[in-house]
Amino acid sequence: MSAETTGSRFDGLKWLVVVALIAVAVLGNSFYADQSMLYRVLGIVVLGVIAALVALKTAKGAAFWSLVKGARTEIRKVVWPTRQEAVQTTLMVVAFVVLVALFLWGLDTLLGWAASQVIG
Image (cartoon, rainbow, N blue to C red; front, side, top):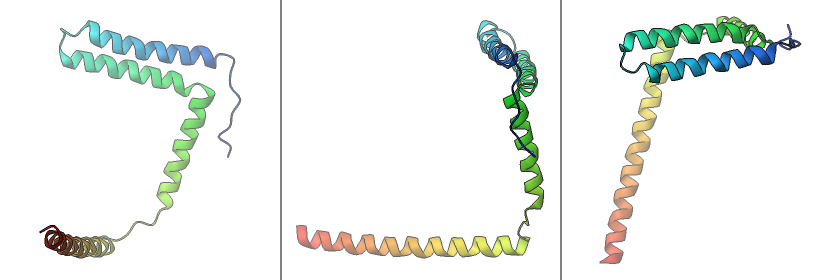
């Protein structure tokens, strides 16, 4: 499976449409600042979805979608730890952090005491 595809001669125009849609969303949000937040957010979401759909129709958008599908396939292959393994690993990390914190606290106390002895 190859994510590399040849671009259409209209890809540049499609990306221009995507940029224009995003610009309209941003400027529209500013222009209609006196309107309800709900309507402005819905407008931005709708324009964002349309921009994403147009972007997916380009060669780079298709390659990106292919990458996303491949990543989902790979995530399904991962062997996730059991609850017991996750809890044990977390407890080991917490114990190590506490030990290092105590060591650094002790070292700081010792060096602070030594510095105060030298300084006077």
